[in-house]
Length: 276
Length: 203
Image 1 (spheres, each protein chain N blue to C red):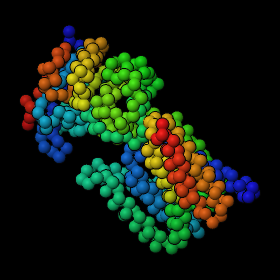
Image 2 (tube, rainbow over the protein chains, first blue to last red):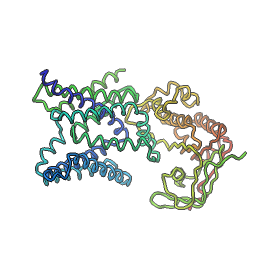
Image 3 (cartoon, chains in turn cyan, red):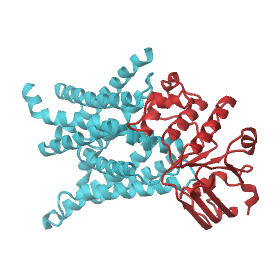
Image 4 (cartoon, rainbow over the protein chains, first blue to last red):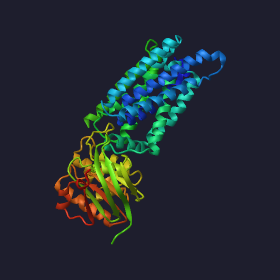
């Protein structure tokens, strides 16, 4: 067992740091009421990643495309999805969530169509949707750790500046011009989402983004710093514990175990606050 | 005395986003030390005028020249809950990074120390409105644009706020545009106030 842990030490650390960072990012996306839009953008990124993998496989012999193609295509399609979803939201009519749900269905169908065009993608599609952190390569683990180490301190240190934009969008409804923080947040979120979809998968990404902040928003005491730090702690610790449990009990799948632990941990974290 | 112009509007015409004309031929010259009270019945385009001034809504014709170096805008309070459970002190802190202090926040007299510990999501509409007004007054923009700032406030707080606004323009090179109902202006004696009744410019 010790040998197993030493093999996975870097991966566990990387996934935990990224889980904590995503939980911090998720608080701001939820505060902007962008959870459904984030699902769409993630699905757009997934479509691009699958397309990139398909093209890469098809043209690999010709060496015309690099292995960066899935990430680049993921980023392009995520940006396109973001643009379309913003336009839909600005057009009025039905509720934003209705527009986003419709867009999500279209993107999901496109992903399925692409996997039909490139049959080798079926296993990739399953991998990208449900992920398996235990299969991350050493270089992917280091890249994941690096992204987490940039994102986590940013989400905490710059929480006031980012929350100011979130508050203006959600509460003041004021006419918003592009701000430095707004642009940084939009671009940074897109890059992080694409990276996460490609490496740790759709399910882990969405779970870390929204489970901690959703459950902890039921907590009794208010406080910006308290909420963001608590979400990050739940995201990070639950990822580590869930990952280790799935190694100890080898029949447990990694990501669903992490999500079960995360939900439970967030619930436990919330309960003592309600008593005070 | 007449100070430098902070806002100049010439021959402005604008309508609703779906093209219904609202206002035609509006001219305004707002100097520092003045308050412009924008009044008129519902649907005359008071809030839309603010959006045109802030560049968020396109005019049909005319020009708007905002000469103030800093502009602060407070929209009508929608009274929505915020996903992140923040205190009113947090709301102050995110808007006044680095310079927020409880002494400053309570010094204006709209909020007391106990109110700062309240949660935004459980605070009353009045407490929320006082928080937003306090933070925007503390940020000291040269041109302060307020849309129905007395909504949710009781009579005493309304009177106190108008006194603060009077002091605000008197204490520096600043001016205020305030969307409100005419009754508010007639009931309270504001100095240096110009009333702009938009119903006289209806197209």
